[in-house]
Amino acid sequence: MTTVQPSLAGEPGLSELLTGLGRDVARDGRVLTVQVPTAGLEPAVRRIAAHRGARLADVFASDPGEDRTPVTLRLVWGLDGDRGYLITESPVDGERYPSLSEIAPAAFAEECEIYEQFGIRPASGRPLNRVALPPWAGPEWPRLGRAPAEPPEDVHAPHHVGGHAFEFPFGPVRQVAVESLYYGLVTSGEELVDLYLFTWHKHRGVEWRLRGCTPAEALFFVERTEGLGAVGNAWAFAAAVEAALGLEPPPQAMAARAIALELERLYNHAAATAALCQSTGLVIGQAAAEIALERLLRVNAAVFGHRFLFGVVGIGGSRRAPDLAALRRDLPGAYGELRRAADALLTTNSFLDRLEATGVLTEEAARRLALVGPVARATGLAIDTRADHPVPPYGEFPPDVAVQQAGDVLARFRVMLTEAAESVRLIGEIGETGPGAGLAVPADDAAAPPGGTGLGWAESSRGESLAWVALDGAGRITRARLRPAAVRNWRGFDDACRSQNVFTDIPIIEASFWLTVAGTSR
Amino acid sequence: MPLWTLRGLRRGVVTTRYPARPEPSARLLPTPPAFQPDVLTRDLADRLVAVCPSDALARDGDALVFDVGACTACGRCQAEAPEAAASSGEFELAATARAHLIKRIPLGGRPA
Image 1 (cartoon, helix red, strand yellow):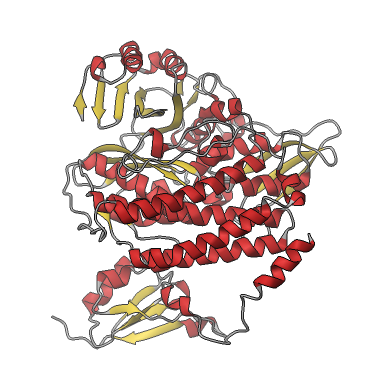
Image 2 (cartoon, each protein chain N blue to C red):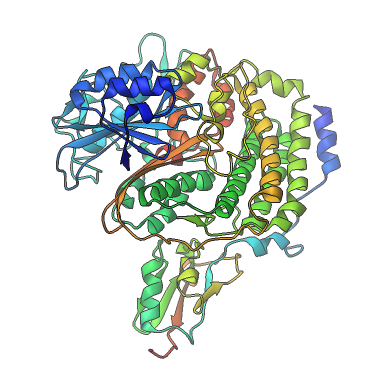
């Protein structure tokens, strides 16, 4: 990491922003890191949040190990529009830090998480929610840092349902093999008054598990953290490690990753289409979309050797090369199956009526909660890390970012269908005219230590996936932060559900978000 | 809605009675490993046990104990020792008793 003057930090507006934050700025590729003392954090957050195109992408903490202080608070800002990422680092000596969510509401979920894991909380004293740990989690439970000093019942928000409303509990065990998720549906009869989610039933402590691993060992777990986002999350993690180690994967490997990422987007959007049909009771449409889904999974297996594309991404490169002949042979038919189902759905009024004006999110809400991916794009926010923060091969093969304005389920469905078509185009162009038809696979784990820190990102099917790692001198992980897109977008789900919807709309809205519990409860 | 019924009938049945015919896509599935007893030594068995993330492998004296029910077919053992483990191609793993899924593989290899 090299120290730079703010004047060297690119566009004039960004220079001005950095000048206001302080001179202790370091640049590593597209990532700027600024040291901000805790006392100056509040004005800094106000200043950055007001900056054009700045989006609070993540907030997380780390400590020096063995429960020592200070805990370092990191805020990751996406400076969208090809201007990179900005990280602020603030050491917190006491147990309080300035409340971030009062300035940037998107930070609230992370404030709750940081309290559970590191025992520090916002100075506002605002009640917090449970995120990862169950109510009976005592101080002896494994955490990333030290346990909170105050008993949880003194800090967590009490839950009351008053008036004529009552709570309809649903989950955490739901139908068939659906992930564990508890819905608290607050209703006065048919209309949904409020909704809250508990996701801690599925918490697995993946970030805790990654400490002490080598990057290659950790990658195995990262791929399996959220099975439906294996490529996106693994790419973000590998990119973070590569940034820390100063590795630059060869273009052939990046092309292989991009083909896998677009295949992952395709099968996820097909799965969301099937889920939308199921939630609206259109069983033949569901079967048609599931045939397309199965064919796309078989394309994955034929091209990369794994139906869910595990094992494609490697540290410093790619571990599997695509079978381009299988891609040419099988993809058009599989995508054609999805296209036919989608075309039929788009002319079925009884289906479209259930989607239109259901689960509406406004652009203002999406911006306030820093949502990402198709959920944000369906509200009119044209954010896509492939376009805003391009890494090879997306600089050479830019995507046409699909945007809708209505913010409802139908808008999200249309965004997904447009993106599926765009993915097929990108796969074709990268496979046929990208860097080398053979897409050579480099040696894995080629790098030697030293350690360092790095940020990585990728546009998964659900939106921006982020990862941040710190490596020690032996090349082992001291802190790994995984921020799949689901972490971001679940916080928009309850807003969408509250927008004048009834009980039976909830599965439709959930299908259109197409999030995973695994992605947020990692 | 009648159009959807017609569409469904026209598309036909894509599922089959089991096992009407071998499913060609099955060869693309990750499957649990098959081990080569002649190559396995205590050291090699211990290496395989160490890389297994789901505790499907254990060594009991001169036998490698393989719990197929715990195997996730991740392929780590095959990557660790391709001479001793290869994908079995076997994905029909149903058994009438849990114990039938646990295999004891004698270590027949000579120590190096």
